[in-house]
Image (cartoon, rainbow, N blue to C red; front, side, top):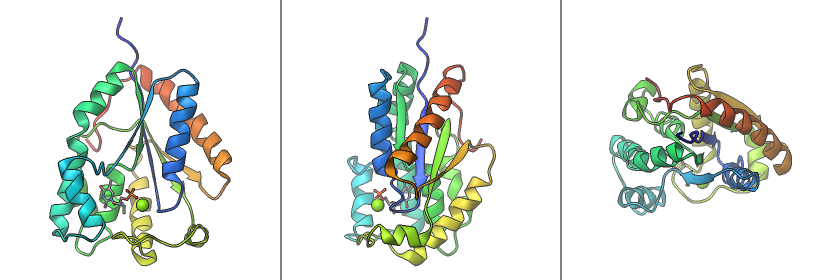
Length: 212
Ligand code: FDM
Ligand code: MG
């Protein structure tokens, strides 16, 4: 008998909402509970495409806006065979950013529609759960200064937040909003509960296709 597949769980949210911390804690909790779990993050800066993206984000190079959007998407597609393999083996994937960041960030630039931005990511493995870590700008500001990478300004982040809100209106995606202003442990407990439900629901369902 084939083993039950893993779940694809994505964490999204504004900068400093705690995505990376929570992804790490969730993977640990799942593994402690005896489940196979693996963390991924996008962009994956280690691949050849990821290195181009990383240099762009660090302002070490400039890339045309459409072109870099397609690179972010290509960086997801190049990892799809690995993602599918792991899911089919029964490993749950906890992913720090995904196509939703791709759309929210590019469509926050002038002249980009949400629909144009979604197109290259149509058909990616569909997350079983997308957790949106919500934090208002003043609470985010209290967590420290922005870094020096591209996009790390409060005006751009506010536009990104607006685009995330538009994406969350899409009920074909299983969005769950988490209040990220709570303590790390409280946020973790919420995330763990929702993730356990998603794991059970995913077991008997094939992997879906995003935005199709
Ligand atoms: N980002 C991330 C995009 O613009 N498009 C994408 O598809 C993805 C996945 O890259 F500013 C942006 C979001 C953020 C930056 O930062 C990556 P982190 O700190 O490595 O998540
Ligand atoms: Mg960052």
